[in-house]
Length: 481
Image 1: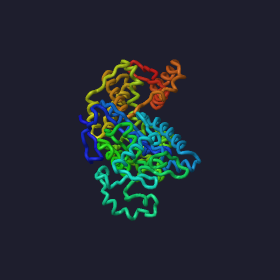
Image 2: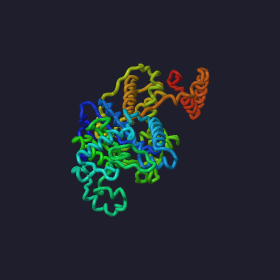
Image 3: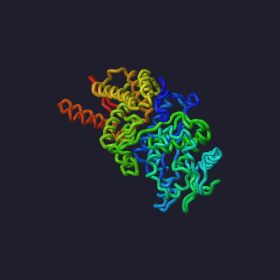
Image 4: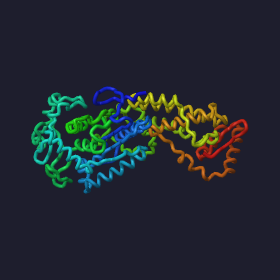
């Protein structure tokens, strides 16, 4: 059961082999913190969260780093509009980021470096590039000479000569930045300070880093010269990740990452969801509508992580229905385990099911296929639940049913899908045993009168209040969930 991954760099699926046996160094290009995160960000964060969980599940020790871009023109523009500061804007939306991700059940990364906290590493990397002849100063700016890196384009598959053909119409020769460059393809490593903008002292004068150099420096500072997985959205392949490779590999002489993984975009009517297009919905807006966070996870995981996924109310509704199915299965043990005599603290899984799940997901993180395994388990558990409620006992032995349920819970947890019982039982505190018995008597009278709608209403009402009824030939038993 070898894990194989589609590597953007090689354009093929490859067996996963880490730099250091049993350990994974993983870096995800995180968000630019100038606004609330939208569903596109949620997809990326859920995908890499689940990939990290799965790698840990199959035995890897994972060190997972996710950065924040906390200096950027968009942040500065927002600070200007709000008569605030870059730091205040960044801090506010980093706080909001953690709030949103906590609601989605996303585990925190091992470290969240910020660009503004990595200035020394950024300047050191630019200095090394300069020493190797791969950086040149120009009136306070510093640029990277793209044509000197012979492998430029190897990640994106783009060739400079092809890009050059259509570039002349898009270049503004009067742009001061363009005039500083030796070549139109060169990109900035260090930007000279502008009036009123934050800046740091450097050998090239006061200024701030370019976007691409930030990630190269943060990867190197936190994870070393070569990492196992470099992750991000497909929109980052070019130029961001392409430029990271050009910067880092010139200095170290080593591959920046063994595997480049990219998640597909969330689309709306076929167009990428983005703030610039105005077709986005923030995570908190969606959740504040009452959409269950686990339904959002399920929506994301129903698509192969590299493909686009189209957002619609219908898609969210389908994911919500799917989550209800899984949730009923996940809550089964907490609701009925005691009445079935399950031993608390014991754990035994179904090895064939776990193996099938792993074989499926090992094919380039096939989480939709993994979900199919979960739904099969959940539907079987729900079937036994209905038999238990209406017949007083299950067809499957309690021991086997416990193994099914525990397997479901463990594998769902790998995907970050968790159901909580607390919300289901909060209404049960006010019912006394006598009141419960009285309602059961009312239900029995309704059944004798063949008023099955009333009988079902009483049973469902008790269930909603945390009381489960189990009918048998010997009468009706009940227990508090």
